[in-house]
Image 1: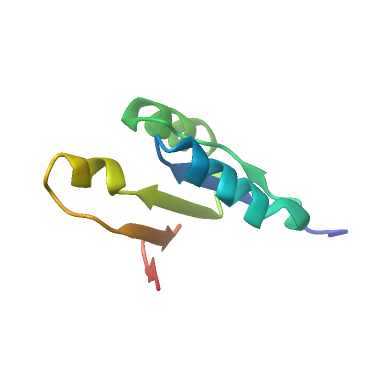
Image 2: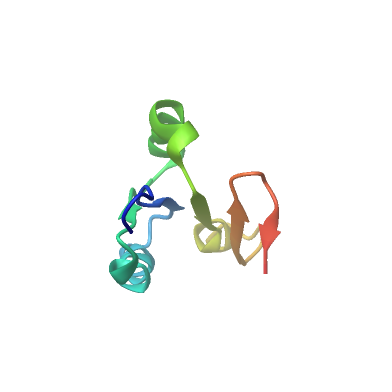
Length: 83
């Protein structure tokens, strides 16, 4: 990826297996994966590195356990959903 910056990816999840799956999925792209385990982590990463972020993933399965909803959602950094 000469001349291009390495992508910076932020999965927001408490699920270690999901975070590892993200790492494995992008391992050959040279991407840096920063995992936010809770809202505080996510906000700190966005505050410090938000302008550099290329992609964010949010794992809502933890919310489903509380009876709200269940879905894995991905958004790009412009807030557009990716299906």
